[in-house]
Image: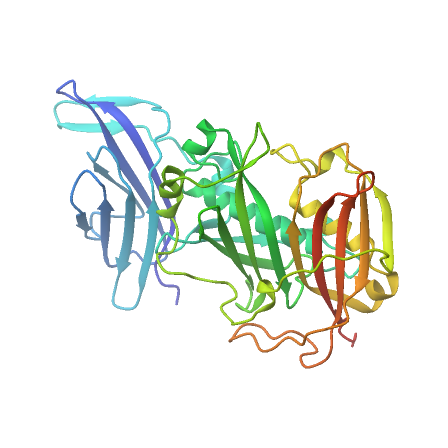
Length: 420
């Protein structure tokens, strides 16, 4: 039997003119249900300007689609909970952003205000993501498309990295951050500041195949005084199995001077409200591989691929080579026999210097002698061939002319599963 569920919530904020000629802001909450409509609805609205207000609406009033209008000037959080004897559903939305007023009509006889609500954009409706119940992380589902898989018909590590970047950007948009840059806040835009990646660590325990659906959860947290961190959990949507994890560190850079800058308190306050209050890590294990320092690979390297040139398509909105492109460059110097017999399990990258469109890059690779065995993963997915040695490599990306270090990396490879 299908139980009732909250399947769509839209929240819009409008500045309107009522009978008293007083301008004020209302929050309009639209809830659409699927399945049985039994049970009461509890709506809790939080605003810095007013105490918490809770509205309970019975099912004889709150039908398939309904709206609740408040006269809050600002709404910081909205929680919607539905209960019946067999089911409870909950959804929380943070930070209501006011769109342009579409139309306003006053009904003086009924002493009420009617507003033509602007519908959600097509992009919002197609994007299969939402904030989690506590509003402190974000989940989104993606289908693996044919152009995102490699010769094995499974997603490439570049595909995974691009999805991580996409869900992180969508998380930022969902809480009201700008689309002008990657998760830039109001203060950051005023000061011409952007986020740039300083470290990325990805572990894939099983690669999703073409047409598989993955669910990625992400959240961000403060990382000292100079940056922030973002973590991800990747699951197979069909069975909930954790098939990958990732973590990253980001620092702030002035887009004009291209120099790093500390995160000031104003910027920190803008995004910390959306972060978990206690430390939450995708890799909570002690001495996990995401923490390992990467030694610099010295010449002569055993394998190399020289003269790599950035394409125009490799540049992102921050006007430099996107961090995912570095992954492809690192893998260019992996020997073919490793590609044929192994698949990438772990990649860690330290981003040392920006790469611009006119740079020429050399990719260097050598085996690393001390190969660590991966231990169990605290209830997450276990890597294949656990207990066997992995093939491990050190990598260096450098500019061809001056020999400047652009990126250093470490990769771990497991044997490909035997085909049945």
